[in-house]
Length: 89
Image (cartoon, rainbow, N blue to C red):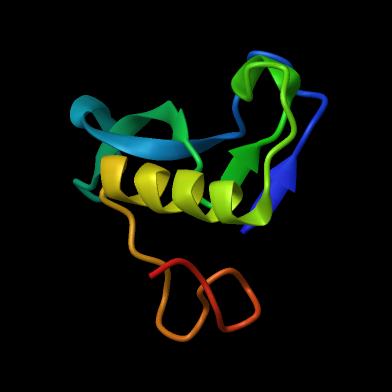
């Protein structure tokens, strides 16, 4: 898990392949797809715009991270949790 500030109303995003949007074919017949941006579930924004201008306890961060993972249907790689072997749950 990574906690970020200074993003204001933005979120940390990642580029992913958009399998619903083929844009061409390579010389070998492989399909080329466009990309799109999605929220990166490994990051939580601690900017005041995301916290109603109030500090967050670590327990609240855990709850927000678990909710984000559930909302985005994300499961961290085995034994990685928050990067140190632990995580919500």
